[in-house]
Length: 475
Image (cartoon, rainbow, N blue to C red):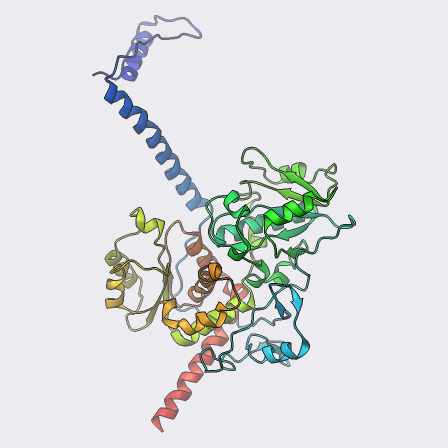
């Protein structure tokens, strides 16, 4: 059966050839041939599905070239700056946000090698072996806030204006949304209310209605002291966005909700025009809905923001605990399974391993694999036959050291951040295409002097300990 579109093209070509059409606005009437019922039904299904698949592929390709930068890890990356971070955070109990007693704070400080002091040159010093997880003490590494501002600190007298937004996605999506929100708050001159980090959600509305037991205050995971150096004042939230919205709505003049019916794509000056409107006199401006996850500002601006968005000393401290077990020459890979595995998007394991060998991943060194807690049976067999493979689950005592500080629903999400830093500290790294998790690791590896400055000193101490142990064994 001849396609009706092909007939239309033939008639049009004939009309042009014979010049048998008016000068303007000509129309060609084509009678579409009747199709069988099954054929018509099949086209009604196949055509929309094909269009959706094409759009998904185009969006994925565009996203890859514009947002994700996959940069290979260096085999010799000891050139990282050796300046270390001096931690100035104070201890809090994150559930209540109140100061610990002085005596308890002094005791906890002894457990934290990352609580550094300066030497005569102004550099920070710390001993990664001062306290070791699994030393029989039964003590957990205490959780640390990186902000001295009380949780949910909103002034009701109108002396300060605030900006709040709706997060969504996994943690790396939430981080990118927060980076955009930081720049928005700076542009419209408002203090930023930073929502709590949450387990992965597929839509903003699902995040909006999450219960408290699925959330973690963001200032436990990110360094608010460092982020505050960039621009707006940051206030960490310790309540759900839903509860905060409901609370503010009950107070006159406190909340202005900007909730576009459709996703907006404001850029640059449009942000100030739409969100910096002087007529918005309410104390809190809430950007509600799915609009946060897009490129609000040009890349050079966002790179400046991202330089200051670093993981907290607490997260880095836990990553160092893993590095002590992995040694100084371990390599790492991130293998995203889950939806990738279900839809067959991940390459054949044998091909992936061959690619690692081609890239110079040594079989003599440990290969740390960052992946989902539940691993498909047999999927990693070829990895384990080729390399000295280690997973997070191989060091259960480290997980136990921070388990008490977080809600059970959030443990795996916190572990994901720690695994990112483990990969940042590796000699070589290879990630998964189209994954924000891998993309963030590659970015931090190329900016390790600001995102994980302790790595050179950690490696030095591990090597010194190994040499000392070797000497003891020989004697």
